[in-house]
Image (cartoon, rainbow, N blue to C red; front, top):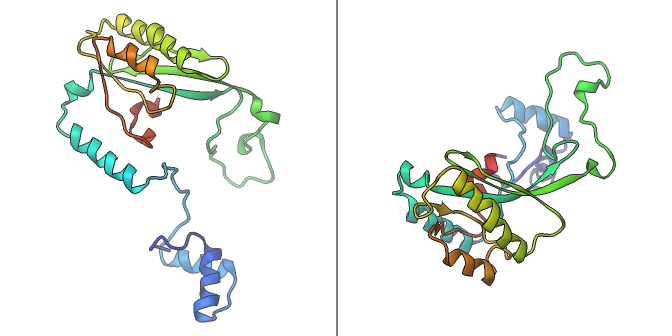
Amino acid sequence: MTSGKIDTATHVNKQLKTDLDVCVSDETVRCALVEAGLKASLKEEKPLLSKKNVAVRLEFASLYQDWTIADWEQVIWSDETKINCFISDGHSWCWACDVDGLERHTVKQNVKHGGGSIMIWGCMTVHGPGFMCKLDGMMVKETYKSILEDELMATIKYYEMDPGQVIFQYDNDLKHTAIIVHEWLNQQPFQVLTWRAQSPDLNVIEHL
């Protein structure tokens, strides 16, 4: 289990039967794993990285490793996200003791079709969250360019940031890297933070 080659007690049990011809129940295996100091835990979700992805992420780290806090304070981080109207897609937790049957606070309730959701584009700065906008339908390159012209520039103005010192971060989604978007960005006084593919976990806006 600690080698990372086998994920579950059931898989361990199958391996025991195959390799050692040992027949026990899955529960016996679980008890043995607990006695050995192991415990089950949810795996964190991370992007699947190819060797190329790993190489360019290392390059990214090397490129910016000497940046100071003052350097990072110039960055405006951006992304699109889905907001559920009813309940989060993630895990729900509760504290309970001696629960007999299902109770309202111990159940994650759901509705048909998820209860609906909205998509938004947003950004954030060291000074606080920036302007955001609701996206109606699929976002295309023209819509994205319009968002940068409106919400991004409004954010810079609102916080009285020096456009010449701003560093704008956005990922490599196809609509973000379209020619009309690049042309517009090249006409602006601010810089663009060089981004790497398969790196949503490096974007601090994910915490917001």
